[in-house]
Length: 230
Image (tube, rainbow, N blue to C red; front, side):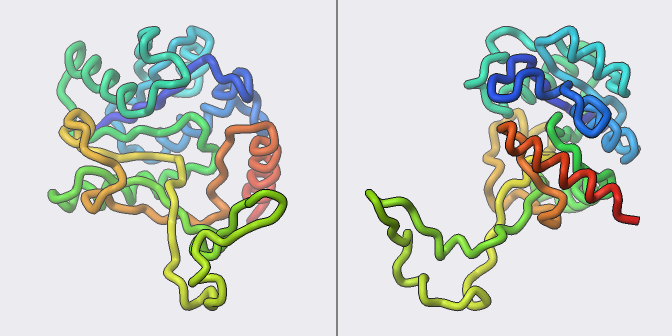
């Protein structure tokens, strides 16, 4: 039994109504729902929300089960883990037990069904793993990062500044699209960023955080360029 859990809170501050705002012609959450449906992996596609408007739109775009999120889990200080844990516990107590749970962010218009399938396959074929989630590489060597210092700058690691890029280890970051996990992994609070997690590597052109109006504009430009590729 596999379920998708899409957290979609209604109180976004930096981009009001972000989860259902029009993005390239559709509500933003519609892209995550479409990828989940296209993957044909899920027995249930759940949206957990504190907003009836989000719930109605999510159902119109394919959500099969809505969880009314309690107020205690609806402020901007609550992380993803307790929201997913609440959704799992609610579903298991009201419907049936589940084996695998994929948290999918509602703000992932570049999410692809084949990457969801890869994550599911790799997690389910290795019983030593608890999670599989999307990552992408940094575009610039993080070892040569600088920070602002007064009116100037300084390196984070002086010893790395003269090294060639190709001699530095490539590093990755969370791509913020999906997080597959076993039910046990989610409910027992296993850490996500650990050796028991499988990285599903995405190309950088399929990754863009959407936290600010500038992010939104960039993401729409990227999306229009991406979908125009034959």
